[in-house]
Length: 425
Image 1: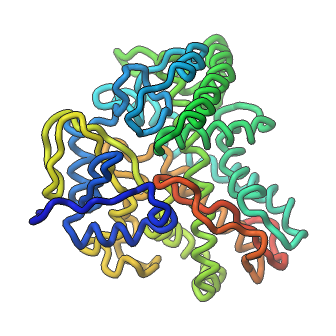
Image 2: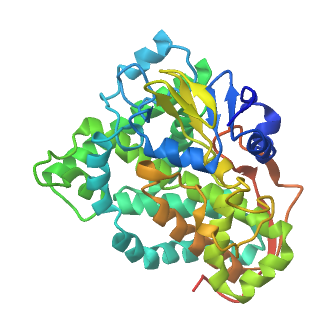
C-alpha cells in the first residue's frame, strides 16, 4: 500500500524511452504504481497486474470512447481532427475485436481464432519457418555482414505471417509499413501528422484485405485468412468484416513486430555477454530459456492500456471511472518479490517462463507460441551461420525506438565469419 501518493512518472521522457527499467525499479520501491499525468495510472507490481488482467469488468480493453472501434489514433485524449476523420470516411466500419474487446465478445473472438492458431498448427509451421530462415541466411552468409532488421529479423516473421495468411510475399514491406504505423497508433501518443499517416494506412489496409476476405468467403482455401473468415462455433455467427479487419490487423502486427524486436534485443544481450553466446553455441537447448529471459529482461512490448469502468484501487493508488490505466507488463519482470536480482540476466532462473512479456490473463497474446518458435529458430539460425559475431558500431544505431511502449533498437549491423551450416537444426 502507498503511504504517500504514488510517484509521478513521465513515460514519454527520452530517458525513460531509452531505459525504462530504472523507472520500474523505482516504482517497485515505492509501492508498484505511479501516475503519468498525460496518460493515467501506471501499474507495475506483479500481483497488481494479475488482479488488473483478471478483472475485465473494471479494467476494460475497449479504451476508445468514440464507438468506432480500434482506429489506431493513439492513447492521447485529444479528439480526432476533422481532416483525419475525412480520411477515415474511406475506411470500412470496424468494431472492437479481440485485443480491444471485453468478454463475452472477446471470448467469442478468442475461441474462433484459437482454432486457426492452435498449438498443433503452430508446431506444424516449424519446417516452413526453418526454410524461410535458411533462405534468408543464404542471402547474407557469404557477405560477413548482416543488417539485422533489414535482412533477417523483419523479413523472417513478416514472410511467415504473409505465407500463413495466404497473401503475396511481394507485399512484405508494405505490411511492415502498415504494421509500424498501426502499432504506434495502439500504444503511443500521436501528433496530428502521425494521425494522418496512420489513418491513410488503415484505409490502404482495408482496401487490400476486403477483396481477399470476400474471395475466401466465396471460395475457401487452406490458409489462416480463410480459416478466420470461415470459422464456425455452434450457435455463433461467423466473424463479420467489421470484426475481421481489426483481428487480421492484430494478427499481422503480432505476427512480426514482437518477433523482430525480440530478435534484436536478444542479439544485443549476446553481444554484451560473450560467455553466454559461447554457451548457446555449445548447447542449443539453452536457446529456449534464453528467449524466455529476454522476454523478461528486455521485452518488445512494454505495456498496453485499459480504461476503468468504475472506481477502483491498485497498489494503493485510487483510480476513477473513465481513467486510463497502463499495465506495465515489462515492469512485472523487475518485481524483486518474484524475480530476485531482476537486473541480472539469467536464463537458468527456475521461474524463467513466469514473465509477462506476452501479457497475462484473458488477453494473453494469441500469437505468443508463434513468436517464441520464430525467435528460437532465428537464434538457432544466426548461431549456426555466424561465427565470431561482433557489432559494427559505425553502422549501427543503438538508440531505442521512439516509443515508450515498443522496445527495440533502430539499427543493428553485425560483422561475422561464416559458420559451418546453412541453417539452424
